[in-house]
Length: 270
Image 1 (tube, helix red, strand yellow):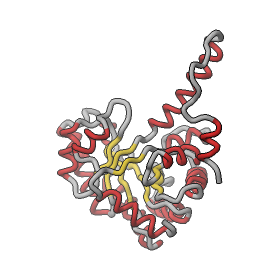
Image 2 (spheres, rainbow, N blue to C red):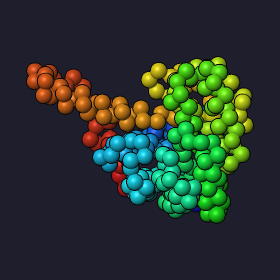
Image 3 (spheres, helix red, strand yellow):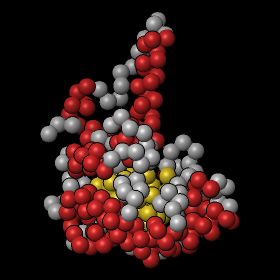
Image 4 (cartoon, helix red, strand yellow):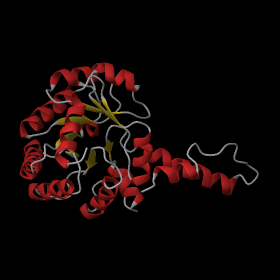
């Protein structure tokens, strides 16, 4: 895929295929190359992993420029489409969101993930519309994945939760969203109800506490991503090894890492 337009078109089409688009989220060049080597058709970033690796907390604390630099490095290292997690859009206004989207399109991304943080619906509609206008102005059919943060309300799958989630999904679709991302460990019947209630492809999470990939797919998910889970696991391994070295001096390493020095060197080569 040689051009931004071709990659964006291909990325959008990946959401309409028989099997769901599987996105194990990356946060730097090495993790992106590892994911790609495992068979990924596209790369999605995790804002949490990007933030942590940059010395910041997740949750709209990272600056746009820092996030952009991380995604630029990933984009220069792979040829597949990239969906960038831009948190809430890196700015308070719709104009800020438009500027963010324009900047990320410039480095070659094919999609963005924008969270609503439970903002008032009309305000989030304006932000999504601004993102769509920025993409249209750039001539790129950007896949705008609208994350709905109703998991913060609790009682996931309940009637009130479902009504609020679908109301937001419907509103965001009218504003130019390409898909919706509903966070949380969703039951199969909840996924099916959501998929039936929206015209947009449904993105759900995979990780500890969720259904399997096959179960999520059968329930109606068109896109399955890992979010911050892989980054959390990677840093957990670092903690485990460091703790063992300090606390268990008699312990021995029983087996080498699955990805050793030579393998990683090969994956990140220019």
